[in-house]
Length: 90
Length: 222
Image (cartoon, rainbow over all chains, first blue to last red; front, side, top):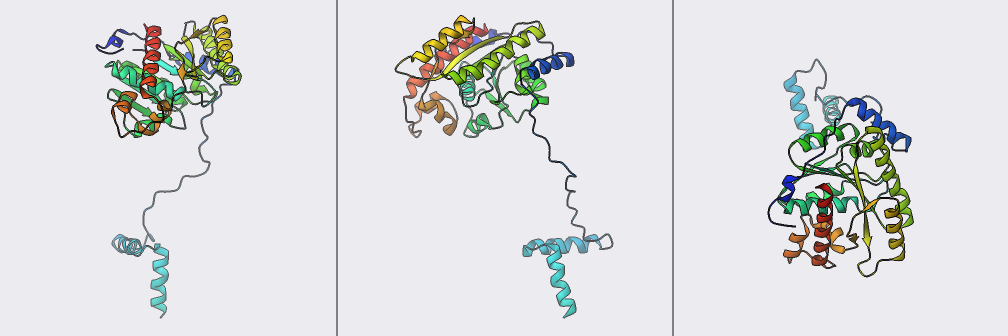
């Protein structure tokens, strides 16, 4: 089975796929145990995208600088603020 | 162009292997083949990750709601569409069958495979009735012995033919090269020509088997 493309002559049979037809197929399948097995999505609210905003009153450039420094040190912004607080108290 | 669907609610019967062999053989005949990987185990995606044969395109992660439009859009491109389904009884399977020009039900020659595989055959017949059109379907026996045709295999073939079910000849023999395709990607011809690829079996025999299988499928699509 090689050489010229013999498959080019193959034709698909017409299949009118209406919503009604899909519903009928689902019904036939369900009666035989072919059920909807789509995995259910995880319940609950999806996590919000990170904004890196520390507080609405903090200037964005300060917030961004703190975020960048925390990332550079490999710690969270909260941990960096704890370090800053220690310095402030000391 | 035709849509070929591999269906069986039983896992491990050789649906993905059949899909890979047909896709590579039809592509070798200069056809554009689109393969839809609808199996959560992503066997075809794993095969494709090692390299697809020229002429084969893969689409993966297709769920129940996407299967009909995906088949229709791929079909409209003038390509041969091969659908590899999950080995469970799901609506995804029943919807894919409704879009098929040929449903292939792979089955190992065992009583369990025959019993579970017959559910797919029954579903095809019920869909034919519900839709008022015929859906061509056939069984291919897989992982058969290269040396002998076992008694169970002979009996199963007789039973299937007796029930008016089309049985594809030749069966797909248990060959190491078939399973190794998923480790190396590509097709059997590439495997045979590449000395780097180490196979535990006879690739030439596997290739002859795959070509004869593809030819038998082609005859059913004419």
